Length: 172
Length: 180
Image: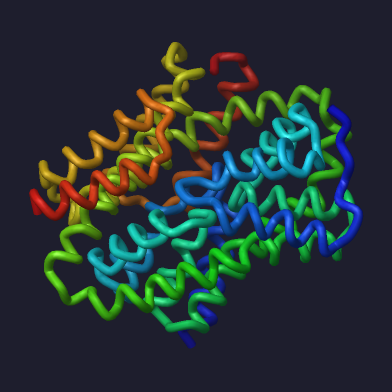
């Protein structure tokens, strides 16, 4: 039953998603495209693009992946699974966190997390811009453009997505 | 600036609905605008602290914030109401967009545009990573962990289930020893 498998896998991702949705993009891609071959790399990329361009939290990319794999029930299951376990943790941890404000482990854990999150998000960017692990300079050029724009300016990221779309139409 | 928590579940729902509905190009700036500036439910410092917690926890950041703040004001009911308010409209819109896209996906021009948008989205991830890396850029051990995670997960395509426990143990140890 594919809905059950989707639910279990995305629940697991939910627990691993420190730093939010971008951290688990590489694992999501590895599993649904490479290991299970439920959808193709192109499908994955298309759902990612739609999820980025639409308003709302980027975790909705997971519901689009679920929709592509198993229709509207898939969309509900993946979103619920992606948010549920993390929501339960948030619900119970919020109080504890406030009480532990001055405990040393909190600062230690926060410092420890930062480089992992950076490495995972970089991996996500690389996997998304490198279909089948074979470099395409045009995709990398577009990615470099929006990465530079994001670091160097305070513009709304939608402008970079729009520029990416135009460059895609011209170059690809 | 005095802050006043939402007085009813309805108000809480509408507040988070307006965050979700307007968040083109990123949720966090809109969460700040609605919660701190428009509705004045929480202070600037409080917002920073809640966001800090939610970035530390697994899960979508603002989704977690809806759970944490909803609970603070109305308990479990508040968490559920804030969460549904936040996700309701974006969920419907994104599926409507996908259904619309399905009609045009066969058009090669549309496809090129979408692949370009995805590459730009990948670039936004890389830009985010660079911004997050600024505070750790002068710590060689931290950069080694960044590189290790990238080589294993990005290039090697090793499962995160294997990489995360190993990286977390090393990273926590280095952090404990004040090396990162």
